[in-house]
Image (cartoon, rainbow, N blue to C red; front, side, top):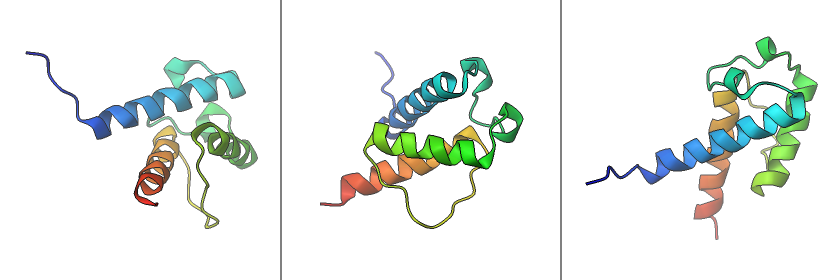
Amino acid sequence: MPLKQDPCKQDKMSTLHTIQHMMAEQFELKKDDLVPDAQLESLGLDSLSVIEFMFNLEDEFKIKLPDERVEIKTVRDIVSIVDRLLAEQKTTP
């Protein structure tokens, strides 16, 4: 009997995969370096690059980033923000 994956975990994995792909393309990085705990600064990304990337994520995922500033230091932080916004979007009529 095949194991069923938790749908939330599966969504997070697809969000992570999409973000990794987008980051690899936009910043010419290796996907192997884009592990969830990778520090954005250590990948050579400054705050302006991250902000520009977040706007690209808005377009890709059809989400609206909040106006309040959120600390984004790792790939996991980006995935968490996108997943949270996607979940909020599903619950909003």
